[in-house]
Length: 249
Picture 1: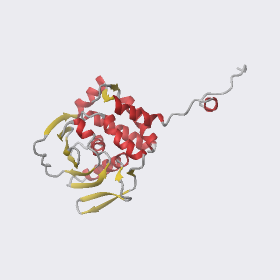
Picture 2: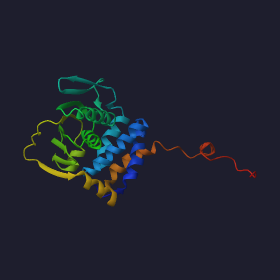
Picture 3: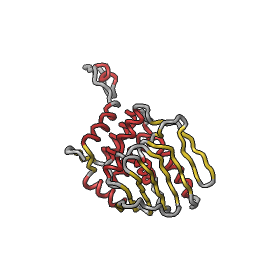
């Protein structure tokens, strides 16, 4: 983490991150989903701003694609890019979480294989936010910069195996594998595992706020600022409750 840091509330994450996603080009509804996943990244003990930046930048600069298709072959559902670009996690996260909710209702093993995604951690956070308590879910990926990472969600307990948090957050685009109700995924050799009770992560965020890297937060705020309307005489006159003052009462 840099020398500068920001502490924000969960409500502020909801407000700023929703609009940051809109500033990057996402619809408002997906922005709300993005903000909720960002909250859950905090509950996992991660920096939501650092997690958010690659996904926001990828969507805004066109490097991440929003055209993808789900195809099923046996117990494997593939989420593939239609245009050759890496998948936008802002778009793919809610789709994957919703699909897992449907599959979990059947109680059977299921696997999802995602093409390279701009921020795998955001996928894991979106899955955690779905609240699928009765199933074990593992989200794993192999990144070029940080090695193999495994996030296991089991009855509101999260186990993160892999490199240090900062390395995971900035690990870069990677293909993601999600296993629902399957065998445990083998931990990478010589890696460390950190276990988090999600309820504790949430209560800590409520009580103390969420600490974010100041540089990453400034990037999020920059995308948020794209949604602001310049203050001009015309905009003030057209705003809610605005108008010319008169002496009539």
